Length: 181
Image 1 (cartoon, rainbow, N blue to C red):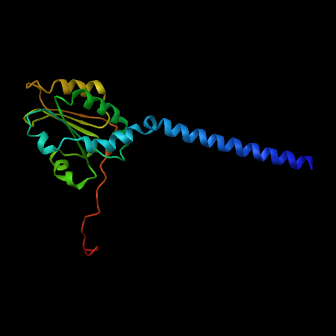
Image 2 (image 1 turned 120 degrees about the horizontal axis):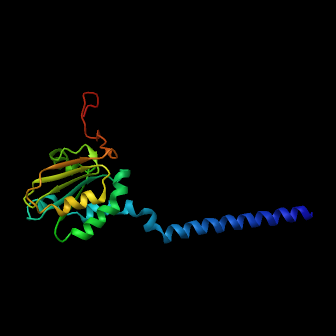
Image 3 (image 1 turned 135 degrees about the vertical axis):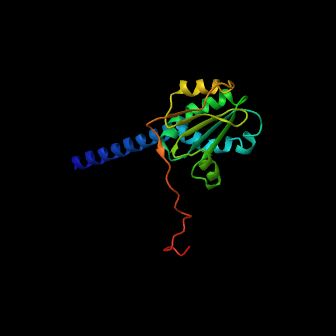
């Protein structure tokens, strides 16, 4: 009988410890959600914070144009850095963010020959392409290129990293003889 009461006490203690552990984890996630999910949140907000591309290419300001996707791990990794650039330069530069999964941006995806993401294109105030960065990039390299946007003697430059996500083909709207579409 004494062993039954010990077992009961042990079970009660284990339940209490388990509930306490789950509570601590939940409270931690709530308190530190911005830390844990900052990159994903930033990517989702980029589209909302974006300058319309048509306005950006005609308002006589240089443009930072990024092609991204919410599923792209490299895009998530670079999101805080890109957000810092936006905070620092948004008074002088247009920031345009185009999600490659949105069919509405297909014209721009083709125009800028996007086949890997993230892809950052820097354009001067006349809309001329100055630099293209594909994949994960060093902050200093992009910052130097942003600072050089005003210099007209800069030639077009392309930098491709080995860390990038290949764009997934969207086959939802393709028609073939077999789908009677």
